[in-house]
Image 1: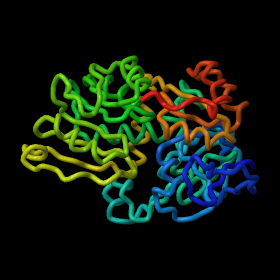
Image 2: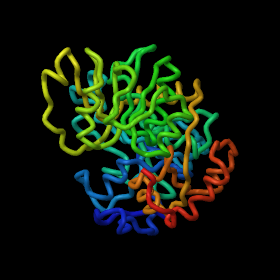
Image 3: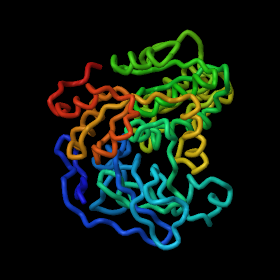
Image 4: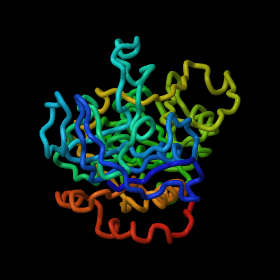
Length: 364
C-alpha cells in the first residue's frame, strides 16, 4: 500500500515525509482494517514531523483524522460490517484499567496509545484499529467533510466543556484554524456569543462568515469581557492576553498538544477573582460520540482545502504558514472520497491542491 512515512523529524520545509510502499496491515483480534479514503491534516501532525513531540517510535505514518471503510475484520471483531464507513481519531487505545480509566477519564490514561504517534495512522491507503475505538460517521457528511470532525471537532468540543462556557455567555477563541472553525458553530448552536482573536485576514473573514460577533487581534480589547476562552494556537504569550479580558470566575482552556513557554503571570491582575487556566488533554470516546451527534444536528459546515496524499508535505507547510482557511484534508483514495457526492468543498478547492506548493506566503 502507498503511505507517507516519517523516518526522521525535520522542518516541514525540508519535506520529511516520503512516499513509500508498505505491506498491507492485517487486523488482529478485535480489530478492523480500513481502506482509507481521506485523512485530515492537523497541527499535531506538524508537531510530530517537526519533532515538537517526543516520538515513541520511528519510522511512523502520521495522521489521526481518518475516514475509511472496513475491508477486513480480525478474530472476534463483529461490531462493524465489511463495507461500513468509520472514523478513527487521535485516541487509538486506552488501557481500561488505570485509575483514570476507572473514573471515565480515559483521556488521561497512563498507558494510552495515539493514532499516528504510537501506531501508523491515516497518511496511508490502509490502517488497522481496535473496533472499540472507531466510530460510525453521520451519513450527512462526505468523507472529505467528516475528516476534520475527528480531531479538530472533538478537541474543540472537549475544550468548550473545559472552558465552562454556558448558553448565552461570551466565548473567546484564540487562533482560528480547523478546530476553531468547527467549535464556533457548536458554541453558536448553544446560544453563545463568540469573539475571535486572530491575526490572519483570511481567518478573520471566515470567522465573520461563520457568525463571530467580534473579530480582532489578541492584543485588542473586545467590547465586553469573555466568560470563557479557548487558546488553540500553541503560543504561550496568548495566555495572559486571554486572562486580561476574562470575566471573574472564567476559565481559559488550552487546546494545544504542546505550547511555547508561558510568561510570568501577574496574580492580582490576571488570576485573582477565581480566574483559571486548564489544559485540554486528548478526549474520551464519549466526547467523540457527542461531537459527532451534535455536528449532525447543527449541521456543522466544514470548510476544507484538499491535497492528494503525495502532497502531505505541502499540506503541512500550508498549515504552518496559516494558508488554510478551515481544515486541510488529504485525499487518499479519490474514488471513494468523492463517490458519495456530498462534500461541501467547491470544485475550486479540490483543484487548489494541484498548485498548493506554488502559492505565496500568508497574508497575515
